[in-house]
Image (tube, protein in one colour):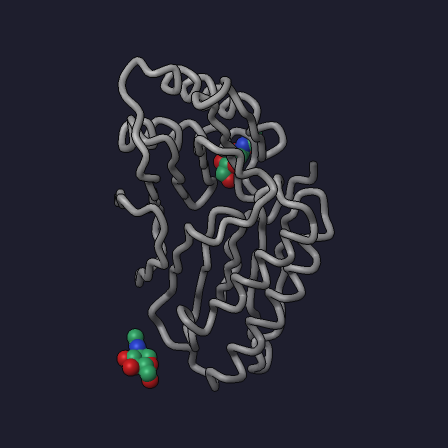
Length: 241
Ligand SMILES: *[C@@H]1O[C@H](CO)[C@@H](O)[C@H](O)[C@H]1NC(C)=O
Ligand SMILES: *[C@@H]1O[C@H](CO)[C@@H](O)[C@H](O)[C@H]1NC(C)=O
């Protein structure tokens, strides 16, 4: 588990995948018994109840400088039970790790939770971002592979930004006989379709910086994320809302 006191960062991380998560903390603090604290507590409980049925929720609570804005998003294939578990965990963890931060983001495999003391809805978050990759090199020509991964994710970005859930998964050819590539693209649903597409395209442009010729890669941000693997990684049953 990690906790970073970074207001903004391009952070590079190399790892095999596991269930760990990240938290970025924004640097402004409030004090105990500040009205912000009770607004934040309410916000977290609203997100806990509102998120699971649709896999996404946003809310703003409080007034003036004590207002807090937050959202939670579950991965598109995660069911309501798992979504609730994840948002609950995220909300407990963020509260424990970042008790007096006015803003924070925490990411898990199954969900993300973010709040700030300013209205960030609809805007692409270009500040909070990290990469994950499978350190194994692909066994085929990496140039061919990279282009295939890009093609798949570009197709999924178009598809995702055209759906109300701003989520798409799919598969493509790896460029080596019958082998397949699997991909995912998802945005937080406060974004417009146009901004979702922009965010995803931006994430795809990061791929050469993180995941060149690697068997798996993810670019994970505060507003969107993409992922590709050489094995299927989402639940088969896709819940449609
Ligand atoms: C939700 O998904 C989990 C993990 O895939 C599964 O174990 C559980 O049975 C599912 N619950 C429902 C209600 O579908
Ligand atoms: C992957 O390829 C790069 C460049 O050819 C090499 O430096 C690196 O050691 C390889 N990594 C693994 C895990 O094989």
